[in-house]
Amino acid sequence: MIAFSALGSSAVANAQTGDRGAALARAATAQQQADAARTRAAELARGGGWGYKTGLVQRAERDAALYQAEADAAMAEAASCPKPAPASPAQAAAQERLTELRQAGGWAYKTGAVARAEREVTALSATPEAEPFAPSPEQAAALARLEALRQAGGWAYKTGAVARAEREVQALATPQPALVCGGRGAQTQPLMTSAK
Image (tube, rainbow, N blue to C red):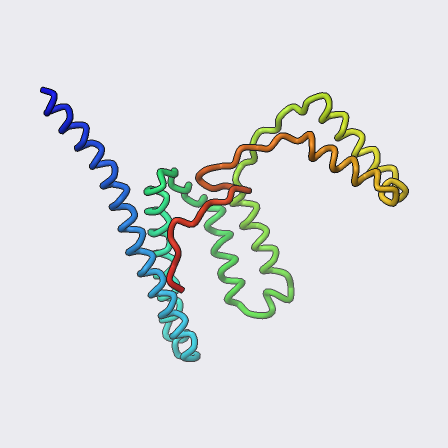
């Protein structure tokens, strides 16, 4: 009976590490394929207009994006992070519009259409912020003092009163916990790098 339970628990442990190992292997393969597709797209783009006219450059870029998405999903699975939420129809439409404008050329950049589309994509893909917390009485007083000094005018800046109040607010601020699986403001460590 003891041997059976020990065998069963070791099999479960091996299955969990095997799943992580399989996810890492899938991620490595997909990353290699993405790098190869990016290299192929760059070679075709250097070849001139025929690569664009025949659609080979776009196909290679599309393949690179597909393989990169597969690699990212496998890395998220291996790191036990939840898979990223699928893009909403509005996000997908905004991303498609941005891609079209970037390919349109100079007029899209000069008129600001690309910048507007980038802002729209960023606004639609922004992660929800953490809920605001109630500041302590000391923090509330320091924030009120800082706001009053900012509205006071130039003398508050010239004398350094605003800078001192900003330092006081920063000293009283409590550090927020960092997100583990990404998100706004979180720095994730690269688990895999491409061979570029």
